[in-house]
Image (cartoon, rainbow over all chains, first blue to last red; front, top):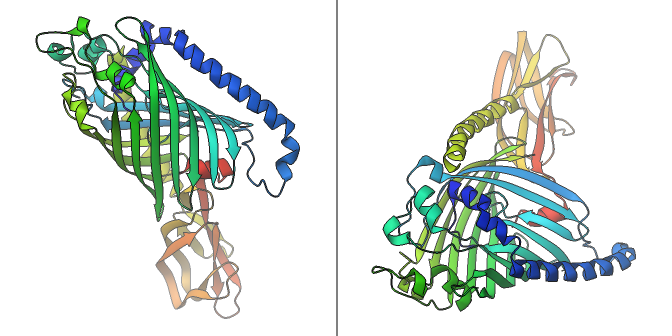
Length: 318
Length: 141
């Protein structure tokens, strides 16, 4: 997930009227409706097939009720590709997270512990369509890209007013996806084919497009440490990239020409380690390097096409 | 609002880090079961924590026994016949062992002459996450 919204700034954006309005956004509602419709029909399918749960050929059944809540308190060095944003104050390095995992009869809410974001920003709503021993298909609804708001960035996020002033708010991209996951002995590969729905463009037309998001994670246990090596590749369609780093006619300044962005991709490499300190507390640290396609750099809003994120923190398991 | 949250977190994070260290101290309490009141036998730390249920837990465990008079004892892991060590005419012995197990282990101090258990100490293995099928997958997520 690309993150433009970060640190305490995300709190500000989360509570902003414009973001709450997103929940009422027509396109989001449309995605949610499709997701619920699909999951409802499959839910019926599951209820009628409950008698098959003891079938020896179906050793993996849909999840029963389970839950877990983790409080994550991290320090994060998180440069963005957007120009003119620097972390300066201590509060800008703090990244609290509430990681919620709940499952019931194939439905689930889950958080990616290593790639979570403020509050519930990294949480996925999903439904398990097909489950086998080593692979499964899921329907997913999640935020694939966080938005950013120039006013909040300037006021709270160390944003440079000269570079960011006058930009319209970019809202979060919610995507409905079908996910394929393949499990190996100590590793996982997953790929999401998603339709992402962002906000509206300068003409108040709905912006949406294809995202293909893949990630491979390999677990390397060493004594009491869990060490994860990860690599990801994500494709973003032109509409979505343009929504975030394009410059529309009404945003043009002398230093900021109009710009239409092309489709792009992001490659990531990651190492993450976690160590248990007690039954409730664990320490974690990680480095993620992201490389965006070269054309991204052509945007007047973009500073660089490579970023390295470093995290260090503790988690409390309830 | 952001500043308040930031300042609040700046206070909360160090506080929780302190709590974390205190938790570690608590989990490092000694485990002692002295069957013979005269002998004190301890294992430190008493608890070894893994991230997932079923994973081997690794620790360097310090076993120590103290006796008011010099005695001869052998150290055993409960359920195992092979001794971990024997000492002749000692009143205070301290050894370090490499602990590696996915289950709690009890250590026994036995008299060398008659193999009678004099004292026991346990190292408990615990975990943060149960190893359900789903969480087996979560760990990779």
